[in-house]
Each structure stands twice: as structure tokens, then as C-alpha cells.
Image (tube, rainbow, N blue to C red; front, side, top):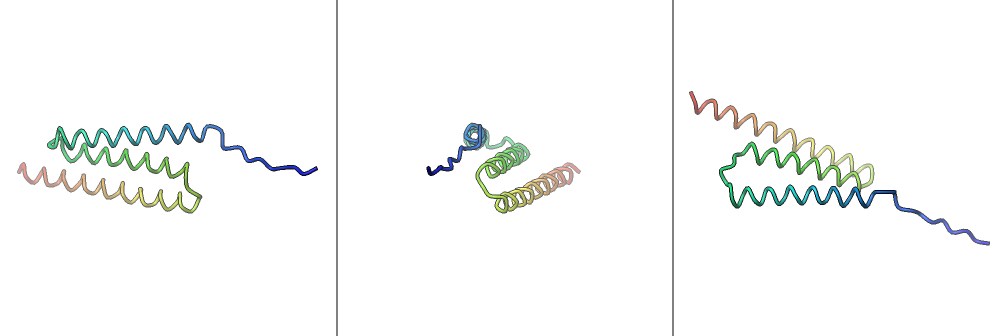
Length: 100
């Protein structure tokens, strides 16, 4: 008698993937809305959305990628987050200089 090994998918993984994808799609729609309807909404608001989008992409990566790729994605988005923070600081500094 031959036994077959049946691999069952990780419980709830598909639901987490669908949920993470839906949250990412909502952020994309929000960005599209702001760009189309509120172009003067401010850099800070767009940078905050970029951070949220990065967080969602990291979550998706954790569900889809192997361990090495997950680490690379995490490092790439940490770098992106650092650059967003630097950009925000630069805009704040420029704003203070403009006021003086």
C-alpha cells in the first residue's frame, strides 16, 4: 500500500493574503484620490501614505516570499522608511527657513 503525502495549505494564509491585498488596494485608491482631487494635500500626507503602503507590501512579502527574500524586502522597506523620514525632516526644515 502506497501512502501519499498531502500538503495542506497553511490555515488562514489565503485570508490573510486577501486581507493584506485589500488594504494595499485601499491605500492605492486613497493616493489616487488625493493626487486627482487634492493635489495640494501636502507632502507629509503623501509620505505617510507611502509608509503605510510600504508596511502593507512587507506584510504581503511575508506571506509570499521565502526567508531570504523576506529579509531583503524588509531591509528595502526599512531603507524606504528612513528616506521618507529624511524627506519629511527636510521639508520641515525648509518650511521653518521659509517662515524666518
